Image (cartoon, rainbow, N blue to C red; front, side, top):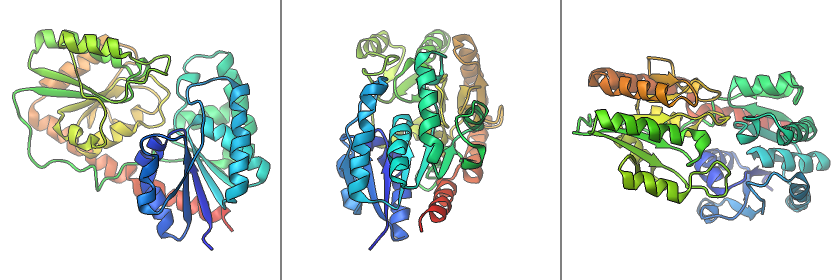
Length: 372
């Protein structure tokens, strides 16, 4: 009988887009792999590869610990029925509540802290509760992976985790075989800046739009594109009305959502993410660098890991529309040969440091240590 490994996250979209290759690799090693997440449009996609899916309802945007505590019961019931040999947990809410259930049942759990998000931007009561929940829930973890050194240091320094349980991963890694560069130069009449993210203010979307407005007045041939979910449930979400106003003004093109982000990345001249969200390491930046696109992002936690200043892109100050505009103009005015060289340096960096195979290898090693 195959040993079961459960992967838990707050959306099926996340597991399918960020962890599918890990699932397939674990399956190839003889494990029975089960995906656990709320139902969404991606939940049905696992079955084609023989991966079971179990729906787990949760309020992704809620911050009420009493309401969320019911998740412990739901996870406990599920884990009792499935009897997994190991659980891999992702996203904050799952890291807390699935870990409490796994600890109660003495099932090995490996956590991945992929950024701290909105709760850690401001120090308030919610932050204090979240920190306490992390202390309690991660006590019995077999391994806690972090995606950047800032988050790892914060958790260790605040006493949220024991340092000996922690390890650093190169983000969630990138599939360098899928995200490959186009061989031809674009050299069209327009210059395309592309931002790929959930449409949240914390991702620097407003700064990008404002910087674009100023740049377009000087350089009418630039095109600035936004690609990603309009998420009305998040308190910092851009509304569809705001987005439509920008589109009507002619300042940006909103591309909606896609399963083929690689096609849009390849058609851009530069990828921009002025985020001040507590990122792990943004997957969109890894994918952009892997297709040999130069990057502009903030000198902020998680983002700075992807850019070597002046080598494969530029770093700008968080929340500064003025500095973002300066860096976008600097990129725009670079000779094409230099810009293409920047992109190739980014691709090189991905191959050496951020290949998804590195992440998968580390997971396999961690699982083998705890699954007996």
